[in-house]
Amino acid sequence: MPISPNQGSTGGGTTVTITGTNLASATAVRFGSKLATITANTATSVTVTSPSGSGTVQVTVTTAAGTSNPLDFFYVGAPFKSALSAVSGPSAGGNTITITGTGLSSATSVAFGANNATPTVNSDSQVSVTVPAGTAGTVGVSVTTAGGTNNGFSYTYVDVPTITSLTPTSGSTAGGTAVTITGTQLSTTQSVTFGGAAAPFSVVSATSVSAVTPPGTAGDVDVVLTTSGGSVTETAGYTYVAGPGI
Image (cartoon, rainbow, N blue to C red):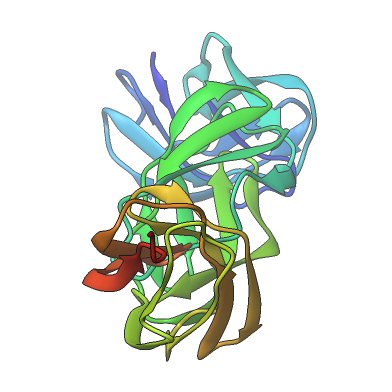
């Protein structure tokens, strides 16, 4: 006589179906010593709403002919989240983050605002999930397991950055030139490179970043700015100029 699912929240409220034979007109379904609410009944199945409980209990079905053999049902506590490996990412989604906590082994869904994703369970204390696409802004993150749903964390969707100008657009091959990069969605800037070489930078605002050029070779180079929302390339956006020689 199978039971599905065989686990549910300690708070009760799980819809459980028990299948077998001679189950018509069931008069009682017990989870341990507690009665469950019968919501549907046929000769081969009984559907109930589980009562609250804890630990492992035995489930039995009683009809006019007697009481069935017992089946185990496992009560699971609500999950607890302790950390997200990243709290922001591109609006397009597609990046994978890790959620750590406890009670995560039966995780079936992770919601980012109104968008759901199916996680990969790594252990009771960790799941990984590919972030679904979303709209720029902050949303709540919730994990649903057999024990219930837990909220409490936020995730920020960030649009891909843009570059509108660099000032100045040229400087010495020795580097050390202060360059102001203006654009949009720059507040989460993670790196700036000139011709592939990393440049020290500081975020001034969501529309401005200040960077100092590294040494380079004379000629035009691409400037690449990367944020948690993605990367933008200003092709041949900066020119290294060699100093005079005699």
